[in-house]
Amino acid sequence: MIQRKNPLLSALLFVLITLGGFAQNEKETLKVMSYNIWNGFEWGKDTERKANCIEWIKSKKPDVVALQELCGYDEQMLKEDALKWGHQYVQLLKTEGYPTGLTSNRPVELVERKLDSFWHGMLHCKTYGIDFYVVHLSPADAKFRLREAKMIVQDIQKNQSDNYVILGDFNANSPFDAYALEKNNGLREKYRPKSDAKHSNLLNGNFDYSVIGQFLACPAVDLALNKVDMVTQGYTYPTPGLVGKYNNTDKSIVANRVRIDYIFASPNLANTCKAFNIFNQQETHGLSDHYPVMAEFGL
Image (cartoon, rainbow, N blue to C red; front, side, top):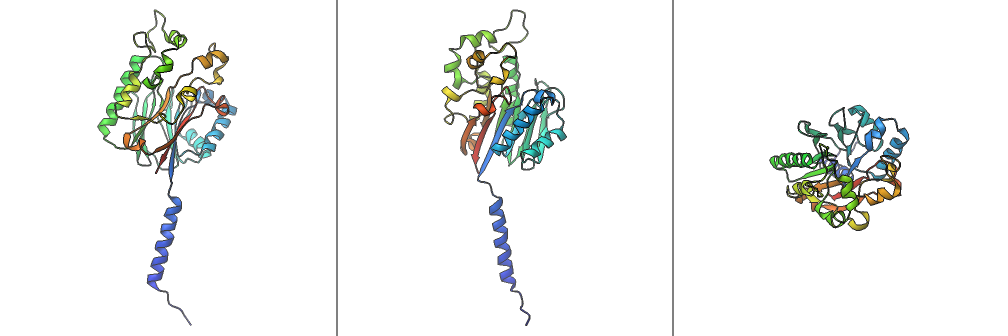
């Protein structure tokens, strides 16, 4: 006897299977990481550090990764690395100098690459429905950094998006960290330029908080606040990897600790931030001269 299929039952089964598939694919969190990888692992020559760094990134299972100092990289090279931590989609700012890049496990839309009037450039991409601005501001000039910050903020405000993230190596100090910085006369003297210098990381002889102030007023929220113990863990640079380089010692590394790597988010998106980490523990001491940071959002 031939049994006829019930079309209503078949349709119901199809809906249930489809919904079940969607449920399995839904993510409860979005992990966003930023990492300055230090001269592209010496332009690819330091294969051991590169392998260790890739393995470490993979272990944290980020969904989106912003990278700075992708020296010597092209887009294919970045994709080969990103595939190792599970990301199929990449965008690279440029192939010369000190590029930034973005990788994701979801499609990435390139919105804009900006190079003119920037020290290293600015990469604007969109993934997960969020506008990501990957930055690497001037490492040598406070006034130049301020101009870069104003241009980026202007772009963000012009875009009129409710969901944006600004992340990377800002090379700038936050007013929220002033309580420690203002006591650090040694670091102030280290920043003080020679009389014939063209650039200065100080502003009129003082630590400069105006750059980060621009992003806070954008408006954007510093996601580390109230999620990291700033007294004991609030630093992203330098790491012990710099000991023996540029006259650095164990003592000077500790004395010159600062927070210059950030993840900022629009107020709307910041309200969904569940956790923030500055990974400045033993396991990342030798991976770069910067420590990575990661924000976790609820979806």
